[in-house]
Image 1 (cartoon, rainbow, N blue to C red):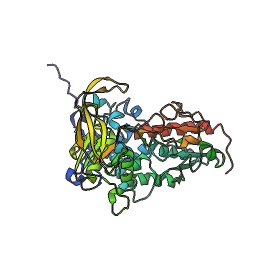
Image 2 (image 1 turned 135 degrees about the vertical axis):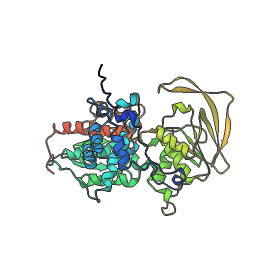
Image 3 (image 1 turned 90 degrees about the vertical axis):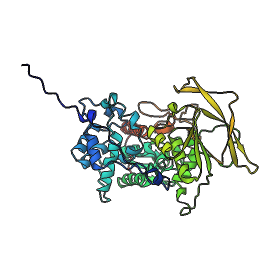
Image 4 (image 1 turned 90 degrees about the horizontal axis):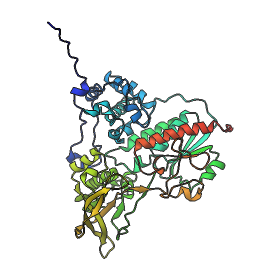
Length: 482
C-alpha cells in the first residue's frame, strides 16, 4: 500500500475572506458629519492579520511610498502586540491614523500583495488604521516621543503643512535640525484640513499629529504666506534658513472656461470644501461662516474631490445632488470605496455627459446648465477613452448650485517673488526626480506643487525624499551659531 502524503492546509489568506469594516448606516450619515468608516474591532483585526502570508520576499514594502515594514506590523497584530505594531509603523510613518483612512492602498501596497493575484489582498490600510486608533485609545493622552539627536546647527524652513510638509518636518527634526513650518492659512494640515471632509478625516486626528510635531520642537507659523509675508530670499538671508522645502500643494482650481462660470452659485470644489471643512460652516449657526447651497446641486467631475463635494452637498442640501461626468462608469477616477459611498448616500450620476454652458437668472444666480451627451472614442494622453460629443444631444438641467471639481492648479503667489525657481508651462515646480532639488540652491520641492495632484502617501514619500536630500546638502555647509 502506497502511503498518501497528508495535505497541508491552505493559508488563511486563501480560505478566510477579507474582513469587512463596519460603517455608519446611511440614514445616520446624512444627519451630520460623523465618520462613516468605523474601523476594525480587535477580533476582526486579528483575523485579517492572520490572512497575511508573511512572504519571504514581500512586495508590499516597495509598494508603499514610505516603505513601512508591513509584514512585521501585521504579524505583531496577529500576536496581539498592538503597541509594537504602532512602533513599527511609526519608524517610517508618523501619521498612520491619516494614511489608514485616506491612502489609496488598493493601488499601492495592496495592489502588489501576493494574495491579490487569485484572492483578496490583505487589508493593509484598515489594519494600519486599527493600530493607530488602538494606540490613541490606550495612550491616556500621553505622547511617546522618540529621542532626538544633538542639534545639528542648521535651520530648515518647510513651506506648507500638508502631508508632504509634515513628513519632511518630522524627518528633518529627527535629524537634529531646527525646523519651522510656514502655513498660509490659520490652521495647519493643508489638504488634510481643508480638502477632506470630516466624515472621512476627523480634524482631531490631524490636530493630534501636528501636536506631536510641536512636542518634538518643530515651530509652526500660521497666517504666513511665503511670497507676501516674506519672500524665499528673505527667509534664507534675513531669517537665516539654510534650506527650504516647498510643499504648498496645488490649491487653485482648474476653471471650466464655460459661459456663465462666474455666476453666483457656481463654486470651485476648493472653495466649497474649504468653507465647509476649514471654516466649519457645517456647524452653522454655531459657526458664523455659512455655506449657501441650494436644493438642486450638480458637481462636475468624478474624482475623489468630486465624491467629497457631492457627499458633503448631500449632507447640507435638502434636495437633489448629481454628478456630471463626461466619461462612463468604467473610467471614474475616484476610489471605488468613495464612489460606492456616494451611491449609497443618494448621489445621482449622469455619465457620458459634458457641460456646455451655465445659464443664469436676471439676478445673476445660476438657474440651469446645458449639457451634451457623449460617446467614447480613442484613448487620450491620460490613457482613458476620449469623450466625443454627440451632435444634437444637448439638453438643459435646472440647477441652483454648481460645484466644479475637475482638478487643481498651482498657486503662483510664492513664485512671483522667486523667479529663479524654475517651473514648467503649467506652473508646477521643476525638481530633480531623485532629490527634489529645484533650480535654486538649497531649495527643494515636493507634493502636488511638483507635477500636480497625487495622493497623500505619494506626497509623504516626497517629503521623506526631500528631507533625506536636504540632510545631505546640509552636510556640505558649515553649521551656524544660533
